Length: 252
Image (cartoon, helix red, strand yellow):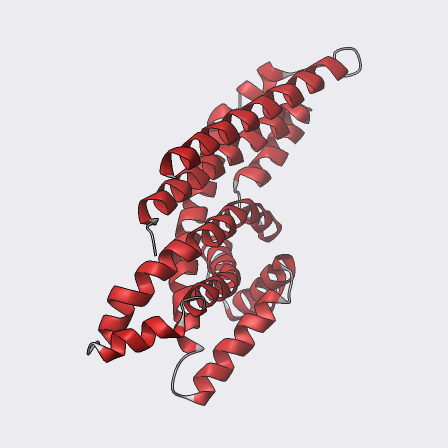
């Protein structure tokens, strides 16, 4: 089974590379007469572009860590013995999942952070992005945990496991394996959603690409590297998630 999944992963990567190559060839073939390429002018701003890519990667990494921790906290909060905690966590998850990320960023920053002077756009936007994604991850974690049969819980209690041992040896190992596919997809979505921080004035890679295009009087020369820059983050993340999924796979 692991070998077949590895072969499938390799084929998916090769197919993605082929599709990207075909699209690049089509773009190059369609615009030779109607569009004049200015790669030299874009190359002059390569360090600025790279700086934006590093900022995007840093924002994504920080938001990933915070969203995973927040998702775990929210999932555990929905199972807390106190009703007020359960209601708060459940309401928070429902509210975030029913509100677009752009609205969360605008209301959170301009309606709360900026008037109260709680921080700059960069840390505030990162926290808001993590807070939004945490609600989705909480549901993924909850679904993975609820998918484990009641009989396994009863068997663990029958042999004398306490609550900590139940989670440590029975629930968490199986939940991690079942949550990995959905978690990986959500984290990839988080990387792409980081581009919306440009509406808050954060100079991440999307905002910097717009600035470079304006300075160099170009468009495609900026957006093509922008797409490749996001792929440089999302493809390794997807590959890593698939490797971890194979590592945690076992017969139940």
